[in-house]
Image 1 (tube, rainbow, N blue to C red):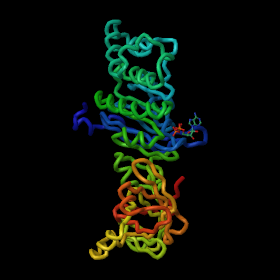
Image 2: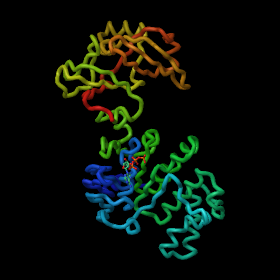
Image 3: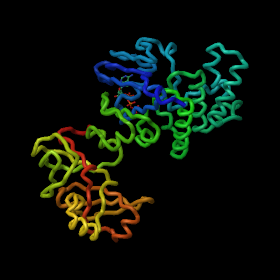
Length: 377
Ligand code: ATP
């Protein structure tokens, strides 16, 4: 377990890193610090440069410019073999002709350790990844999830300072993916090894990472904890890429109000000028259906809940198990359809059904605006 003070120490520092392939710039001016014992995910759409960045850290794709320091050592121009990391690829990449024991022992044998030490370590690693009796088998005799656990055991065998995971769960089916997600996270916590995982799966990043680096077209859009990234996206790209987000065209009225059509709505304070054209964003779970009684008590309180309500019609409702996904339209928001998550309780209590008109309360502190010109790529 990593102690609190160790957590704050920078273990990996990337400074002004660029990578070009011919004329194509895959990474632009990437700077970031990873703390000791931290689990960081590089998250972004296909082609955003996350694998290129991981490969630069590993020395597998040398950067065009910029520096990388690991544990205060400048590793920028070191070959992979002289860097201190273990790596797991999406494709497991186990040696098919070697037994599981031999696969795990590979790095230890290269390091010249004694047979007895190697055997004991392999046994320890096999039980650490929950496959204690599988050492004599060959990779093809294991399932995908089991092979990936062996790849993980092989990667941590020599106790590297850094664990690099390149989409390690993508090739697995959904159920195995979720269970392995927990196992990797638990193992990482137990070992306290600084870990970087590349993924395009936001759920994976949100559930596993201490911090997420959101990338887009070769640049970092935002670095933050999962909650910061989800709750307080700094760009429209992050707002759009992480989770579900309604986007409504609006016009700025004041530093904390915007208008949709004729309706004035309070939002998170911003710095845009009056009349600026913006995109207002609000998550489906923050669209709160208001009953008649909510409405009359809000009117009598003159509360913001009433002020920040939008009249909508339910266009469609889809039952998703733990909640209903409702598609809404409003004369105030033009053609835009809005999504709202309604609890089973609210649907029952308020008789919510297709065709019904109702007021949706939007808490001002959940409505964030971005300039409309800040297009989402
Ligand atoms: P994915 O999830 O699809 O792997 P990614 O975010 O990991 O995407 P990268 O593999 O880092 O993306 O690639 C970033 C960009 O660099 C892509 O446009 C890719 O086509 C390009 N690229 C990567 N490797 C090379 C290469 N060896 N030669 C030329 N272009 C490359």
